[in-house]
Length: 291
Image 1 (cartoon, helix red, strand yellow):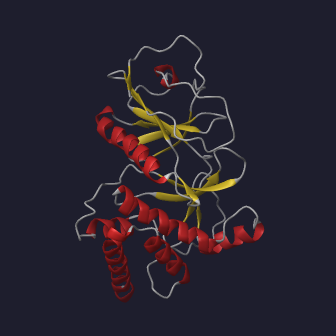
Image 2: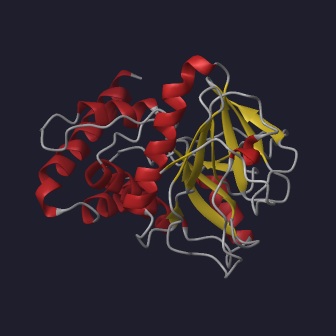
Image 3: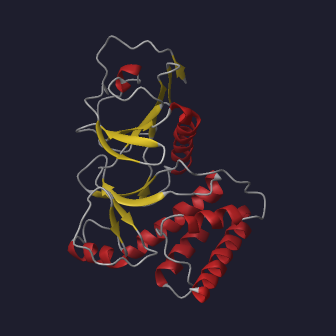
């Protein structure tokens, strides 16, 4: 729905405290609200208005399509979009409640964005800004330096964490299955190529426990599921950071990934799903030979 720009004079239940800059990407800066599981993404240039608005709508569509699955990966919910140049405020009705019972959330108003830079932005749910990126397709070198805002976790590191926190972390095989399931659903349920999405380990939005999330949907593109051309999916798979197990048929984690990918695909799109898997396996085999 679209609202007028007039800010309510009443106290807003989500009125922002002073935002804290927690990072920046190619076209936007991320701000977090202290003590709240909310993040705002603000474009560097107002010329990127269409791009940030597209990301907001894409995140909303993906969440609405996939959030009711029983996957171990959660998707943060898009909360509101604001363009201060046009005083345009958009938000969607709350999705079904998933966390502990809380006070009802009031509609957004422009006062929520008052302390952010005056450029187009959107707000979304955010797990803790301390993120571990799950690089199951790459073996990382030991390092004496740790960046808690961007900590890479390969298979060996995840197994070590699991040994130390067996009651808090899912088995690594289930994580690989979760990656395959969610990639399949993004492809064949939602109709996007999943370009540049990130699979991360972070704090749960509603508790102190660890949780697995998919984030960063700004580069995803839609594709025609009725065509047999899976080239955009293959290109997106290999252009992404190495989150997925490499598509090597003898790799056990890849087998779990592959089985979940197929199992999560609807029957009418199964030929395309199988074709995609064959293509990434063939491309990986070619890379292995030439490397």
